[in-house]
Image 1 (cartoon, rainbow, N blue to C red):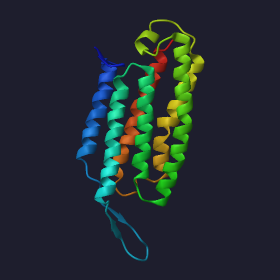
Image 2: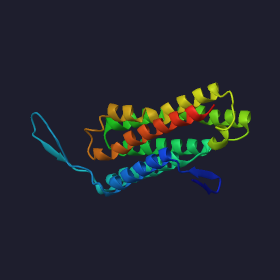
Image 3: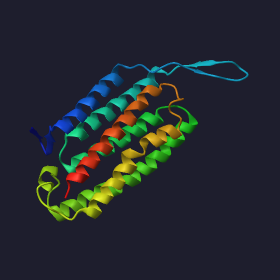
Length: 208
């Protein structure tokens, strides 16, 4: 089912609908979830209960919701440029989720991930430009109907996707986000990366 929305084309196929529903369900779970309380074990001074402030929780939850909504949009859009914009929004949201934790090592990982994400946006938008110049359209429905030589463009897009979204879980792990207070919100980082990688592979396969 094709649903046009201004210049965005939403297409509900069995594959895209499943990804869309999964992203929305996890977004609702994130909205209803409160950050966990953690005990920080100290060898000499005893255990210390760590709580997340309301301000920090709101920022992290808001970024997780943005990430979930952008992931849901990326699942059903069938315009390559709009898909790229959703990827960039997911990357920005992931940076927000990580950088909301007020720990030195976490902020350092967020900074490094931000640099990689900014650099990765170049091959993403360059790929869109090259596809538009060669095929005259960015509609995935139209691109799948004809045969184009898009090997270089697809390679650029794959590299950009990996840098923008694919490596986010590695930086979350590097920052030891599972040990940081309020860690449940980083689950959206892993979910968005998984769904986006699967969707990107599907797009690259259908692009001839």
